[in-house]
Length: 484
Image (cartoon, rainbow, N blue to C red):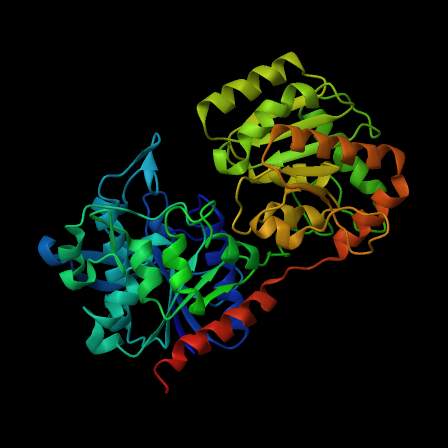
């Protein structure tokens, strides 16, 4: 199949979340299965043009009521692959400090910016002579592409199968309804069954209605988004389209996350040399200025300081947790109150609590390798990757049973030969505290079970090849509409 894969962010060029990880890995896995795939993304200001190949000639992009805009095009390949990635270069839209916002303020023209990206992908295909069988759109940013293929670009792309992946339903891209005139799809599509949402235009809602297939990044999340608790107002709309909804768990790039070859950690190890994991633990304790002691259970956290990630639960449980015989290290950035609160607590409890506000890829690897357990108390989690990284590093996850966390982690049970972590269900500080306390008790008083679970976790694999084969099936499902 010829596949056009369009995303607003792609690792390693630009990243704010899990979408970028998927966009950087899934196309490579699809290529290895024999498909001809190209990736398209914006050329953000921080992506160095001098390291990219310039494609000759400007790209004309029709923007309806805004007229025709002209963009530059650059090209590279995804690292360690032959997958071409094209960058749309239009400084007025993409030459900014952030991807979607700055200082917590979303850009007011995000609707036009990503309509431009979506339309430019069609025009690029025409420019380079690439005729896709499948258009794979991702999140609200490119969710208008299924409808665009059937309307504005029908002449060239009317028989193309369209797939929309929802990485996070919370963000839907709602904007002023006048964007319909920029899209040029016709006002008949501004209705409650498609793009209209309380007299505003909702790209994700319309994409769900128009795509030939819709996927989410775990089976559990595909079910959860059909409920009021996780549906963010679209639960009934998604239910109405669940005959074309599929949950496919994200994979992990084990070339990047593997304690046997990781060059970011002080000592590599495998399941038969867990003593070397202790060396990583001591290194981590020193880095954060904690007491160096291999017998104290060390719990790590890497993630955004955001409500979704259960940060409020951690804040509420923290006084009780710091009274337990444990150490905690945190790496992340986000809501300012959380940054200040955790930094303040780390100053007061410097012997058993350390924090690094910001992000560091190297430190993230060190935390995965040096921690005994990894905390992910998310209120919702479409897939989650850190718990899967943790399994590979023998760092047992402590998670709230939601979305991909529930799909990948099986609760500790001494008699269960498949358990690989610790789970709690209620989104309360009390549930979090009690589960941490329980995990510490197993760590200290049932070392045999803990070690057995570590080895089992390190044997588990969630690779992209399996996920890519599932996407292959979804592509065939989408194409069947045109091959009847």
